[in-house]
Image (cartoon, rainbow, N blue to C red; front, side, top):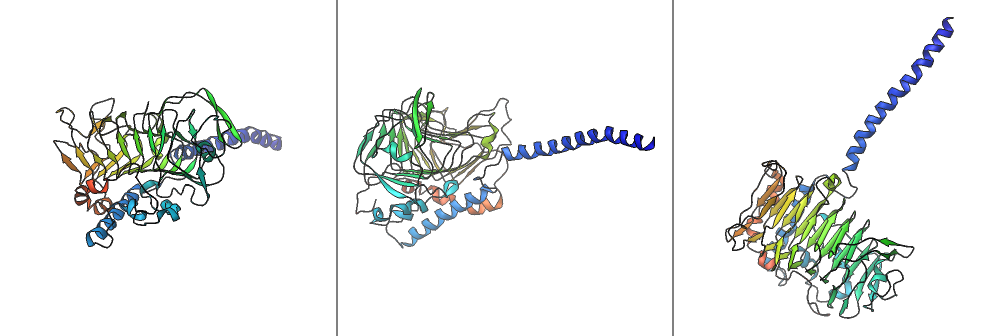
Length: 424
């Protein structure tokens, strides 16, 4: 009887114990999965350290210039890394060692062979001809893509890039224009350098190839110049972008480890969008460096417009905006360091910053910092949140000095007019 009673008790308790264990494990898993959702394998735990590295790179280049070690040193650490070499075209892949900031590890096609684009056509997005840019970017192997001559490439559909690719247009004049433009989706290690990207149009509802073994149906694209979607280790450098149907550069849906540098932006409304939506919390992993760009004539807003993540805006030249320069929502961290802000004539558009928040004053805890920025024509930056940590403040000690050099540092922003055998 006692044995039977113990057996029946065990039979009753065992399912209860199993349920309790499952509940405990489920709770732990939920906690872990919640943390994991907001972590990306390519984001860094201490973004302030990367900001410090950028400041150190600028200081080193600036000090070399001051001491006159090299006549070509400008104080722009990216350009000073490769442009002093008169024979840069013999070692093009050295460019992959020159990035700074969060996209510093983007190697593109450094370990691959050269692919020479000889054909400007884009007749068949499903079966692209060898020698076309589309045929190059969809390959599975790493490639360093260069161009045989000047060309205008009008894409029928989005140019969907595969991982480990560099598009290097130095030495020629290459335009991606009047059709679809560039899509970087669920890939890694991309460098885009030296292109003129403009007049991009919405396209889609068509089949498009994304690799040698896959093509699929693409719905309508917005008409962005460069669209970065769920991707990492991306470097966009020395391009000239203007007049596209939607954004000039968009990075959304958990993209991170990105540097946008030395570009020249003109004639556009919504320039750069970083972050998909206020409700898409996975964009908390986003870490982007915006450095040495020139935001020029005909621009209205979003330089950039940020959500959730961490954004280092350093040594850019803002000569035009109509509404605001830097905007954001959903509590992004924005470090503005050593930029030059020239406000428009409009007395109601002098503020550099714009916050989008459903209730007044809710943004006061957002960490928006301005250090060493040069404010001209009545421009002002509304800071909020915590002061910068000591490590960042020390690294930013040259910011006030560097802001006076922004004109020199950004004087060659945009696609360069490089000639083979000469310094760019």
